Image (tube, rainbow, N blue to C red; front, side, top):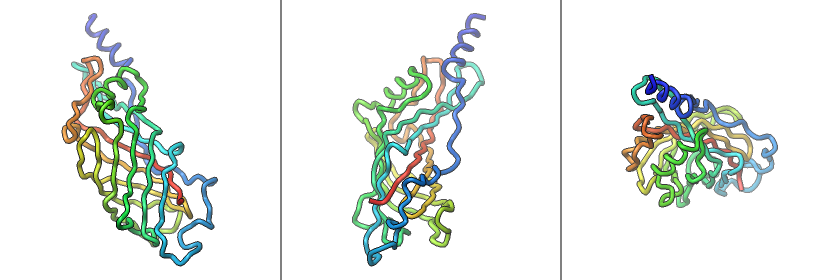
Amino acid sequence: MVAILVLAAGWWFFVRSDAKLATGPPAIPEDLIDASDAPGADGDGTDLLTFRIIADRSEAAYFVGEQLASLSIPSTASGTTGDVGGEFHLTPDGTALAADTTSQFTIGLTSLRSDESIRDNRVQGALETGLFPTATFTFTSFTGYDPLIPEGEQQDIRLTGTLDLHGVQREVTWKVELLRQANVITALATVTIAFADYGITPPSVGGFTLVGNDATLQVQLVAETI
């Protein structure tokens, strides 16, 4: 009986949260829209388009499955950080990545927080953030962008590149849902990775919580031209 009560208490304090993935890109912030700075609004159409991620309007999150040992009570835990920054560069027509430039975003891992400090400590230990404080994704290419879709309507693309995490670099492809209006792009990027691919031991919570072998990462970005 005592063991059951302990397990139940563990579920209540550490596992009961059931986080949900975001389901679409952030809305275009109206205060950022500048039609005079939209692609093609001026100039001869030969300049590259550079978008800078706005850190205080962007967010990165992880989602992992958790289950209390000896009990079939699965849930999804998540942690987030607002420490997201970077730039990406597009061709003048906005339909491809610009050549000979580096497009990437970086996530600060030391500021990842969930609803439980014990979980946060385990995550920080598993990621070894003292040695690897950031994760960086460098763009290689994207597919699926349709220039015929009007501004302000959602585009669904695939973004491929290299994810540098825990000192390991691997190619991944994100599912990206994006909105574009004038000088602003917002996007929701989602990818699932295996911990083993990056040399990460799945973080357990207190020794009585089982964590799945993979994690889903989501990044919500708001970016404007510079």
